Amino acid sequence: MSAPFEALVGHESVKRILMSALNSGKIGHAYIFCGPRGVGKHTAAMCFAKAAVGASKNNDPDIITVSNDWSGEVSKSGTLLAGTVNKMRSDIYIKPYGGGRKFYIVPDGDTMNAASQNKLLKVFEEPPDYCTIILIAENLNRFLPTILSRATVIRFMPLPIETAAEYLTSRFGISADEAEAKAAISGGRIGAALDLIDDPEPERLRKELMNGLLSLTENNNKSMILFSNFLKTEKNGADFIFSALKSLLDDLVRIKLGLKDTVNKDMEKELAELSKSVTKRGAARMLDATMKYERVYKINKTDKITTDFRMTMFCLACELWEDIHGRNHRSKI
Image (tube, rainbow, N blue to C red; front, side, top):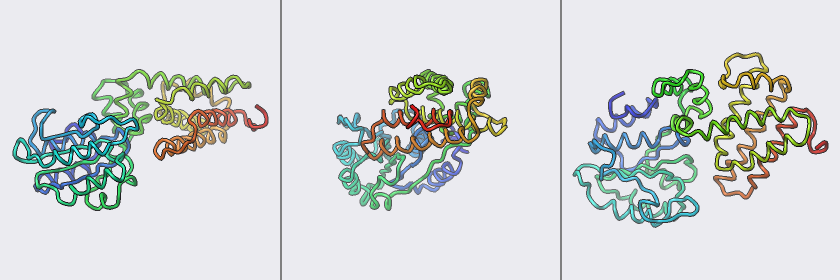
């Protein structure tokens, strides 16, 4: 793919769409880049904007990243505030410094409430010819139908694990096994995989998870309580914990089925040891339980339902213990 998108790994269909707009000069006034966090949406938006305005540096005045910090607003909830949207509306009518096109990139665009979206709608209905707004989002359902109908939606999907692993190996020189593990744990999201390389904390959590799973094979209450306490105190790392736990348990299922293509190859000995204490059905149930409680966690996080995080993780630890020991913890523990 052409030079403007060299920084974007994969996403060839997205690149074709954006290159077509650049080559034809028919750049839309509003886009929504939608996909999971860390998948490459922001990188694509910056590449697109820099190519369109002819920017040769990162801090071009005609490419504005819209956030509460940019507007001087303070949000305790993490939502994009109405005051920020108001500042963007006013700034939009200032013509580009370069005389061509002006881009507004809005991370977490799906955190705007209905009132803020209605304020933005007035710009969507009568945008200046030189203005392009890119809303970056994880959840399209949070946008008003009127916003969706006036924007071009471009969907981003995680990369194949092999593609992400090849990039990590070539870019950072890490081993193929380590790259494959990081690519799988991140779910094919390059941004999330890079976090695993730059930050030692995810690797600590991953090792704690493996040790915790092994401890659950002990036939006593204490191991389950200690593992649940670990899960309950790591709320900030909950997204990674669920991702890593699913990866480990998926490998456990593969081992029980006699398959060789595991991802967490650096933990093969530990997984093999764990497999001695778990039946095939138990391993599958452990993976199912993790996916179930991840859904509970995500619903609670996105829709502000008051399910207690600590209770969610306690129940997860109980079910994992039960799936290993094959008895009902509600009556035996």
